[in-house]
Image 1: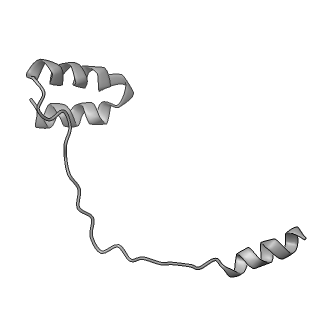
Image 2 (image 1 turned 60 degrees about the horizontal axis):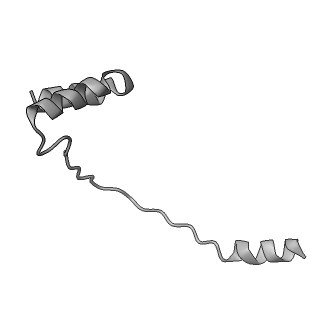
Length: 61
């Protein structure tokens, strides 16, 4: 019985392929924050996500 249901469901599966031609990103980190807040956020990220911490320091000195 389960085999029949499984086979019926397999017939309903359709493959789809999408070609990605471009990607658009948006940079929004700590926007509209005070300088003190930005420093605190960057310091908090030092251990857990140093790459993000460095990005914040680079764009929000």
